[in-house]
Length: 85
Picture (cartoon, rainbow, N blue to C red):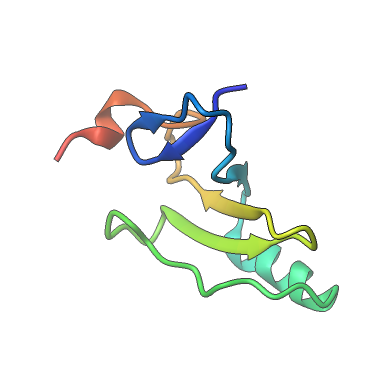
């Protein structure tokens, strides 16, 4: 497992910042979570794309979980293109 301390870095200290779960539909996932009484932050599009959306939830132990809906055709996970301006 790679431990990620934020955008562009790996934490050598072994502290997990958060983990990411890929979802097919952000709206459907958030609706299902809400039906189960799980609150999520409002989804945002960090790169200005309506197809690429993220939202955050926190588990009972305080761990942050990032939900990610990748754009159609995007490879799983981050690619070098995601870091370019």
